Length: 126
Image (cartoon, rainbow, N blue to C red):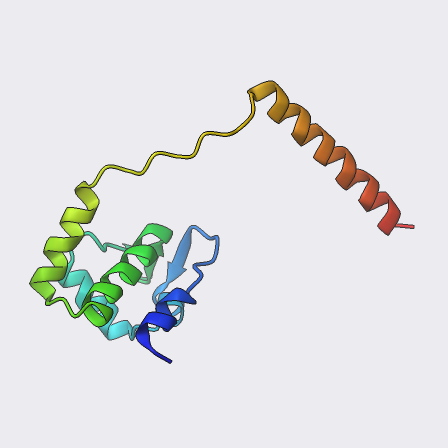
């Protein structure tokens, strides 16, 4: 499997913290490389527990994936990747898509969904 296809298939679980082994499995980057990237890219800075276990935030995992993409797929040097990461972090955030409904219609839609789910639940519990 190519590195490009490899990165496209990566789904970071919806969690707050990850141990280094979990980050290694998710990103397919060896732990010793993750530790090296921590020393090179100061913005990757996992917290450490009392037992000195690294705990990466979700943003750290996403940053590791970005670094991996720059270094492996796009063939950046370490210095080039550091510079590109800084540029990316300075770029303004993309505007969020406006919702096509008002707060009142949104609340009504959610209430309808809740009622529908409740009726489905009662059907399934029979």
